Image (cartoon, one colour):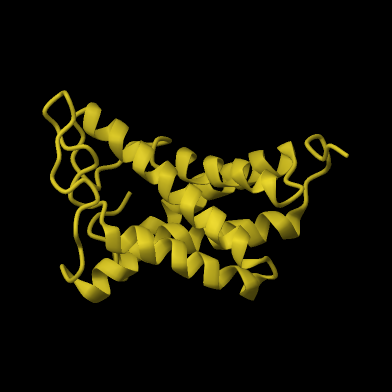
Length: 169
């Protein structure tokens, strides 16, 4: 049965939002705890055809791997399988890399804010990907993306005040 047009599932949205927060917050916490250790840039310093970095120095192997691992480990703790966590972590990081790639094309500095571009790909892509494993509805997708959008902006300010983030959004 196609669940696409089903009702909003608040518990599932909450579970997925927790995983999205883990995926997106882990690299920030890892940077604060580990500094420059193991912070090898994903793009290796490579430049795209426009002469700008592919992703930039803030996108590291450490952040990518830890985000996927922590999200996979965290998923069973919120009542979802590790495969869901692996999918959310991977798709979330893919969305984050896509937004970084686009921000570099627009000449934006690493870690600079691009409202919408910073929040939507890293929430919408994982929520869409979860349809493979979970009965995510259109209502869940819309609510999850909207809540993540607002929540990320608010949480970013809190993380800045706690000195976990370098800049507030």
